Length: 233
Image 1 (cartoon, one colour):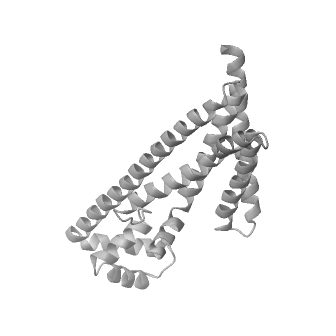
Image 2 (image 1 turned 60 degrees about the horizontal axis):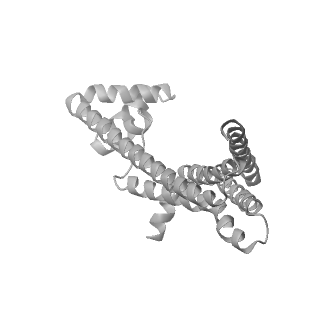
Image 3 (image 1 turned 90 degrees about the horizontal axis):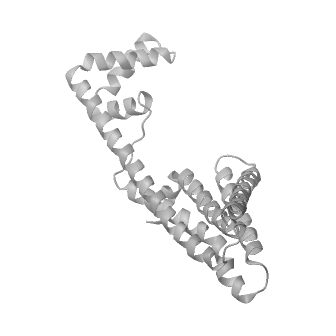
């Protein structure tokens, strides 16, 4: 079970990273807009919490539908290709031969490869789906895992900017806004570094890039809130 979860999180790394980024920036941007508009700080927990839950459910539903659509498309195209192999096997072999010839194989090599790949529907299906259509096989259950990964990746990091307003505001140690900025900055740097570390040794660049992007987006929220306060209030 642990290996299954580990594999799925690796496969959905891109989605989880972007979901985490969106969750963090959504919350901090909402906080910045509320403070910029000069509204009651209590509204931060109300509006921020409600928006976080609504956005996380929206992203989860979108990811579920996207994964389901990719699965259905793969199955539809695969069935069409297998039907073509059954109806015109010589044409299927000719197409595969041409593919290998373009890749530098000799006519004899391409003919042997085409014969081997059309012996079974599985070999043929796997080849044409990846080399011709560029599609990757997905399990029907993957849409549920994708939705779960997106939901957790969005709502957990997204809740971090709200924690200082629920805790520090009562303790009065430091300004909750600074607590949110510090906690968010650390989270953004960690998320960006993890993402970059999956394909580059310079992991810290990913952390810095995501940190700057997140803080700029949140600053935009603050400026919009201040502008609307001056215009509407």
